[in-house]
Length: 318
Length: 287
Image (cartoon, rainbow over all chains, first blue to last red; front, side, top):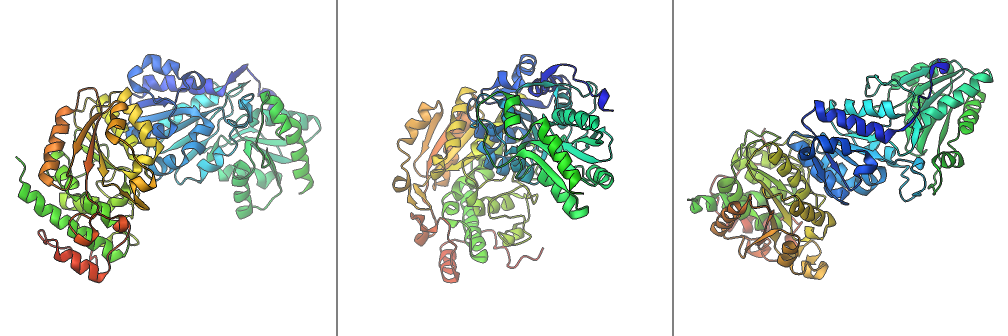
């Protein structure tokens, strides 16, 4: 199966969001969009060109944007908010908590430039805590798709899910390798490769790095079961337990702090149901810095070699 | 023509309800609730075209958002007497298993509440969202919201103010409860609000004034005047002077009853000053 996972050309996940939003514009008249002065960065122009009356420029005022989205949702619209991930979460956590999460509003918080791969803008903008914050909010769905095609499919899928959603994506061009015609199922982990020695659970940009790691491990005779966890919450516990039941050990890989991220969610499942060795590939209690996306991932412990080392360590702990 | 005597009778009972709600659970915010009773009574019993069967989306009806959610006792009493839920349920205020949370919430499904509030500064933004949706839906009904004056210290208020003027949200009437008090004391001692009319005007809003927000006839008149100004390209703000604790002599004009419940003796004293017009609900709740 690994041989069939092929990069069809680099495209950014934010472009996938823009394409998905434009598609929704045609099919879902109740979808509206808001942006806090980042239309170009969020790739929202196609939606705006087609439906100017359903778009609201809020300026650099993210708290207000979340409140307005809550109001639009109250009146039956399906608002998609667009800004960078750090301004979509930490900056407006209380607005999201009270006006959206606690109030059960059908708002889609769409967040670009998440993580280290934001690159040169540096640590002020490289949020690595967002998934943790958002998964703690009761009732929130948290999605972190892996490539352009999957982000487009996820954007379309969340419009038909009634409830608040955090959709996380990123800035750089990145290998696009999932099917263009995929149907996105919220909460359903995707098996990319069957294996027997170790389970690797990856999310977002790290899925491609895990593919590369799995290929190298296969060359060394290590059989990796590779699973794409595009939905952080609700977590596909069944898929995780089924895989680890077979491999007896696991690796999590995410562009996020290890505290509160995907790895911790997997650890909860394993400690409760199937205690097993788990190695984290994540940022370890650190801020990022300016630099190229791939160089930053390598520097902060999110390299292909880090995944390979984590897999070998997990296997050794069986 | 508004039946002012009828509105005054409602307001008197609502004030009794505020005292009794906060006394029974020994917590809550009577001061601002008493000060805004006349505004709420005018809004729900005279001004708004609203449907107590309660539809969350508020299509084709006027809608109100309470941003300063801590004055929930007045809103709950008004909603109950308007028919949104049984008046007897007021006896559950702030108790466990109640729909009447300390600060308003949708989580327990209380009819009449459309968004949680209490963390301050968020109501105007939500109200703007509903106002935008009404425009998209060609719904010509209006959106009302109330904020406290101390709440204007929240930055989000001014984000919303800038947005509403830029986007010509002219189906929105925002009232500021300008009682001059907040928890730690007078606004001017905590953080001065400065020239409020000039601030709102410079943000591009139509600014209206009411010198006595505890004169219910004056409240009706100014809200009718505000309605007449909608649809003219500008959001409307009503700067309404009220007296915190109005209607109960020992609570009046001080911040000390902002978030303090009356004890048994104080409750008896307060109730002796407020006529029972619509009947007191029983304690404890028998629902």
